[in-house]
Length: 249
Image 1 (cartoon, helix red, strand yellow):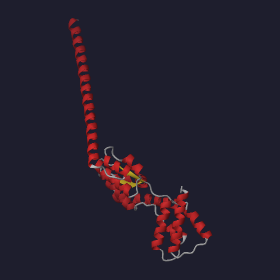
Image 2 (image 1 turned 90 degrees about the vertical axis):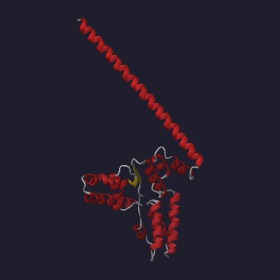
Image 3 (image 1 turned 45 degrees about the vertical axis):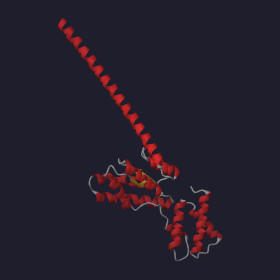
Image 4 (image 1 turned 135 degrees about the vertical axis):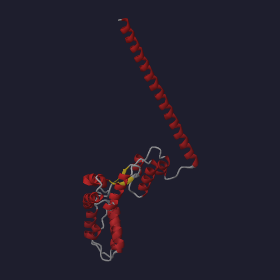
């Protein structure tokens, strides 16, 4: 749902685009066009108007704007390539459209698991492109998500790049980053990089936490060993008592 501020941005961009394309709109025509465009995501509309401003050689029309609506998502082949690469490399983190994961689950993943990459790509493309068109018709921008791998350093880099590219918001990234991604978290929160002193403090804190965890693990292992030895001793005592009773009988 667009806010009043969003609608004001659309109105301003529409007026500028009409002027630069030499299009004269009556107030009634402008109002109707603005009402239609306000049902779409503001980012989609502004991007489409920017394309019209650069590409149109004739007058501005609503059809020309709608033809240039874009959900901001990659092509089906690009999205499939990202997920296929992540599927064969468990250490790799990729940031992909949410609908790409949905499309992968509609038969494509099963074919990929069987080794039929061509069939998987075709199944994926059909489902993905259908959902992209449905989103475009509804005026919705694509939502991105993270397919996490085991390499924490690469995960941190991938998430940071996704924020810079506008695919993930800073709050989303903060929730998805590995716990030890101190420097990236600091940059997202403050917009600045950590100083050498801050890095040293963070490393010292991490080392202290690791030391405490190791100590806790060692204490638990010692306790577990003691418990096992105690139970073994009790079993030996019971066995010795039973043997003594048998001999006495």
